[in-house]
Image: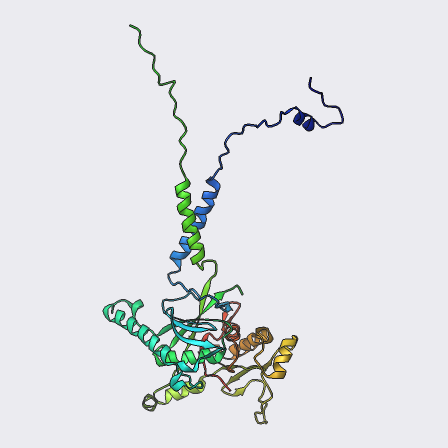
Length: 189
Length: 196
């Protein structure tokens, strides 16, 4: 005969005592309700797709590059992209010169002179990118957005010294680029 | 002959469950790819800067006196970023250094560094590039507003810096001189070569 639970003994413990050893309870298979998660995923996906479509110009800083913050409200435009990190200078994702301690290595300077402002490999790369744009412009004379305007987007690390920036701008000027767009991270005023 | 009773009322359709797993797989794969590749959460903007323009001497000879008069009217507002502070200059000279009846003598920067931080004091003592926070950007904006009040048509500004001044200081100076609470100040920026 089973013992009846005493007043002091909790009912649960009393119930447990009745179970036989090794006896398993049968559970119904649990089905996860995936619909809320799916709704969430779909919303995030739509947002990301929308932001992709509204930003036709994608600016992706090279790994390790820290962009400065600014209160500007101007959006990026289609232009040749030039990246300056603390280790390298890239034109359209192609390496053109090495940077060491905030200076372009002398081997990439004109006459290997460290004091020179002119960086020949950078000039060549920019000239090549410019010639490509000019060729497109020649075949699309009616399309104003394809004309060569000498626009250059500069994606520079916030730690680079002013000297390095002026060297790059001086060389860009030689390659017929006269309007620069400094890429920054937008922040509220 | 008796008819067999209709089974319509007895038949029932089993609730259809959509198999959402393939859809989930696709959505998750796209989502992960986009989150890794997109910079959508970081808003990237640009600041316009122009290269210095040089006039052809032959063109200058051909032009009349009108250009000369226009040039005289120009302010040529210049902001210099040095290791000791910010210099503001115009056609008349450097702001805060010229007094009537006296010759212009170098008295230090128009806006000296904020010496509240030990790193800033150290930078001044050693004549090395100070950190970003050492410059008084609010005062720079106030000075720009005063100048804009006197020259409302002027939009150009020339900015130069010492060789090792970090790029982020330049961007901050541009921000401080470009606008203030929706009022456009000096947004037409020209970068000038460094000063030694």
